[in-house]
Length: 160
Image (cartoon, rainbow, N blue to C red):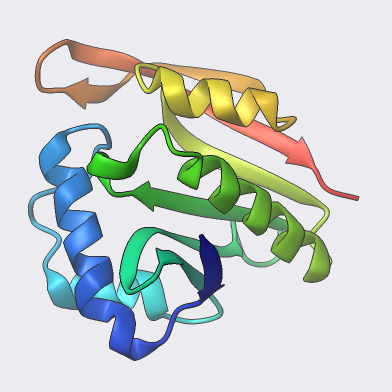
């Protein structure tokens, strides 16, 4: 597996990953996000966007950027998406590790995830294994279609 910076030509495959993850129901992405909105969210502003690939196939993607501008510009956030059919192959772990290294290279002091659904046990476990801690719980914040309202975690890791 190789992780590289995304280019505009990757958009269609990235859009396919997003739609597959959204359809899988593991992440709370709105059905109202269309291709143009996705493009803006993944290629806009000062974002760093990467793809994990194996040969010609994209396995996963992530974006990294400032969590909140201004006084918190030293804190970054990231979003990760892995094709459902290649989960449990270490793609997510590789993406998170790569993003931590890129964040350190960019001199961010902290990485923070503001919205980690508590029912996404695989993500929570992975983040904790990579040094993130739960710093807050937002009760009944995520509306899961099958389980109803679920808790969401804010997770943090210092980088420097």
